[in-house]
Length: 399
Image (cartoon, rainbow, N blue to C red; front, side, top):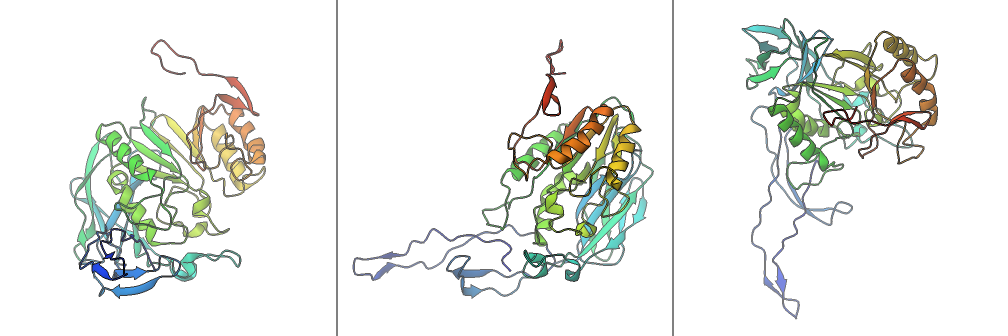
């Protein structure tokens, strides 16, 4: 399949008035940014566009020097203690590997993978993952780093003697539970974009500037954790694009806790959530992707708008119990309750009517949503009515 492509548009070939070629292109070059996807790659020169391609020339396969290399390590929280972290990475080798951290401590990885037979689809909308979108995912390694101290800098590296190890990476642990201050970023629907001028099946151009801005926040010491609240890579059946996304976020996710919530594009087909494996979260089960966690003094309640949230559902009962157990909470979800872009696929009034009273009853301070690809904020709102607007305090801060 075509993973990415570029148009060759600067063609100096010229013809005279009789149609005879006067200047012919002798050579040209094009540059691709390539990442280690473990499998051999070929470059194809074709004419006729994407719909009716005519292959003119194909290179011999190129092999990666180390297709089993450990790649794309990313951190996430497993609980509210700030003393343990999960590290997840990908390798072409199925044998367990290690994460080495601190003063010689180490943990062995647990290894999982999946096959093309595990991919979902439907009669009406076949998934590319069942056909030309499939790419061998390699093996997903995950290990728990324990014995950490809050707000402390640690170093780690991962891999094995057989396949090599990553560079040594520095990360700062989260503030202790109940700490006065937490610096976190929340966003949804980021996706990815190529680092060259290539064309891929789905591109979110803004993702490059978002990642760049977040890296700056991290370098300035203004970032403790990240919450990506759904629609993560937009791979949508093209498996290799998960790896493009992981490559894009590695400068961030390898150094701070990168938490996720599920969005509609992580569950394009009903019942497909059990294979969502690149970002293991502290959930009760893979296909029950709701969880609660505390970073510093902030209690996060993370739910899934793609699963049953109606009254008496398992998720609703869990959500209500969790919110009743805390005094104040901040809650990131995917599909919004309110939006100026008011359509049936954007705002579900039934969802709002069922869940919003639970938020008010438990004095939830802030609710964060993704799904709509625009920034918007509201006043203090309930049942579509504005109850209060922010006011400036003596420092000029909206409160």
